[in-house]
Length: 134
Image 1 (cartoon, rainbow, N blue to C red):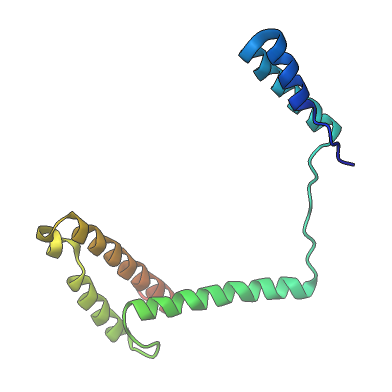
Image 2: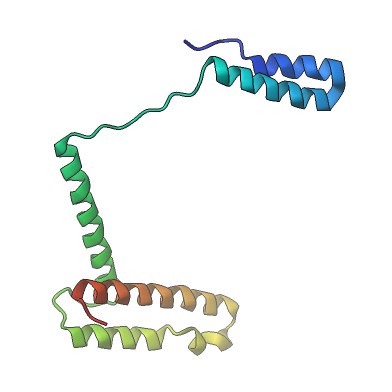
């Protein structure tokens, strides 16, 4: 059952009338404690059936597959590319978007190149991890 009347606001007003701002603070705090004792927050547990558990693990695999697809798209190669082609694509893009190459063009260009370079490195790590490469 929920109470319409909340004690924290009542004690806030009483505390302010009796002791000013400091009284309002302590009154509000006391009212919050009383409200918490009267109607404690409810904790809800989620119970999964076997079918929901299976779907949640398949969601994990879908996420990994999507991450791998994005990595291939970032390196601009196909999923059927050989290991050497993956390394060549990484080197080509790393040289193209290295932050030191655009350092003379200003801070904005350098920060854009840094973020792109980080995405390229992350994509390489994802693909190498999936393929078991170093």
